[in-house]
Length: 180
Image 1 (cartoon, rainbow, N blue to C red):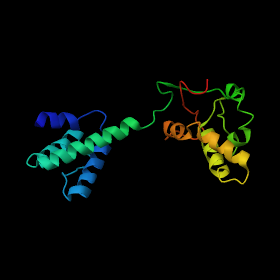
Image 2: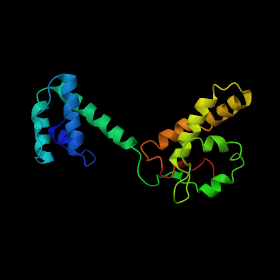
Image 3: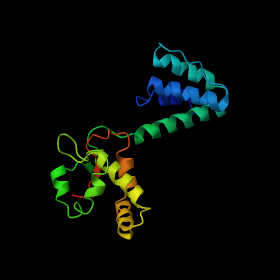
Image 4: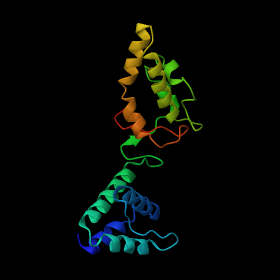
């Protein structure tokens, strides 16, 4: 890798100074050596420290590249605030009109309010359903166990992952092909 490519990779606008600092800490934990990190200086100065430190050790360059790629992957997976392409919010009124709402009423209301102040289905509703299904999956009643299994078939894990990092009282994101 050329020095200019290495500099361009570290200068990526998606990498903040905090990210570079974390990369430097991770390198130290892995290699027991790391570039010098100085707080309160321009980002470019710390990038120069990375370049100076790694220029004579290809293994160190590869370790930096791996850490940068891991950091960028993690940042790409972070949930975005507001709507995300391929998803939508569901109005609480529309949600209550679904045929299965009356069947799942207890599960939906198991815990915190399942709707936001402005009338959308909240992230709390997903937590409520998952918690209720978890509790009822070991129920003595066959009907409750069957209902808990059907709740899990709604792919609650994927919904939880999609809404990871969102505040519980925010509107929940749903994939475009799910529910409405």
